Image (cartoon, rainbow, N blue to C red; front, side, top):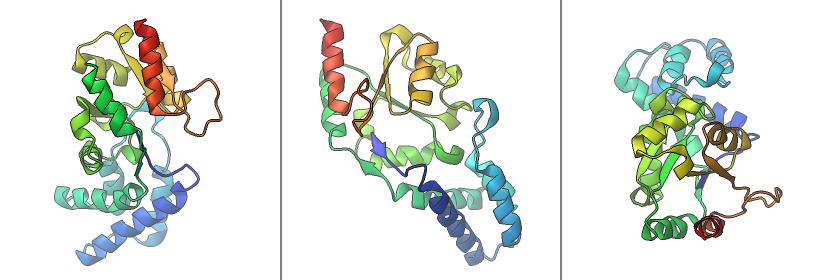
Length: 218
């Protein structure tokens, strides 16, 4: 629904995010490890967690900067996330489609992995910023569950939350690894969206979901 950075852009964004954290710590007169140590620890943390387990951003930053104060850790999370959120772009078809789905009586849930295990509070705030929080019924981030897509535990958590069976749901996502493999493994239909238009087997806009739903209902 909302586009952020590309994989190629992330290294420079990560550098800016860590720079934001350093500037915040300098303002608060908090002593933190030298730049060489920080850089090494950032490189250690810049990978997916083994076995799809979530390693929260709070714990990553606590380790990198050797900070224990909870309030300061939350501020560091916000500072870290600022460059990432600045790349956010809401596609034009999102609001109309979500509104139509709601009018048709469909329930809508958002299930998302988050970069570096960032807190769900930040992403829920993003949906508010783009004025779509009121158009969805449930918002679940991987950090809420402790596991990342495509792990079946994430999808089963959502199913328990919405009180529906897998075969009653359709999952729509833009990553074949996370959004197609995971749902199919638990018997949930999935639909790949590729806005670039390269993949002929995918839908190329969110509004094409309506064609699929009307076809299934026929």
